[in-house]
Length: 202
Image (tube, rainbow, N blue to C red; front, side, top):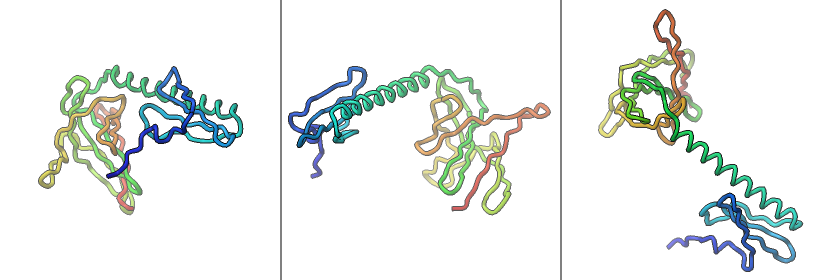
């Protein structure tokens, strides 16, 4: 059975607990062999985010305050981002296109089209693309709206409708891919999309 460490397992005996009243950070101050030390934990973390010894108590206390301030800023930023996500009202319409660009040592590009809108959520389907090679295993591509991809084998979800929360200028497809809004330029009354670059070498 794997032993699960708790916070108490790390805290030195007779350490003095110092809590930050403006965040969920907490520090434990101690002295070992005449050397001042400190442990700092954030939230419910079992392992310390900071654990060092210092030449002086002044330097230790200053470092603890720096850690507290860093935690406050981090929590404030996360709260701000949550507020933006929940209050954001999108203006996307059916037919809006999004594109991804991701990969390691290669660039994968996919296009998604909005087929339905349900409040703050968009229903998307992946569409086909027209590709032109500009070099060895690389080139440019543009989306083909309305030409939805189809599953290639049993269990494949390519081209099937997906429901995603609308965000400002982008959509999170999954933990790896973010799709960005595609901007089209009107040329002669016809919307024209700038090509995206792709590569297949690795």
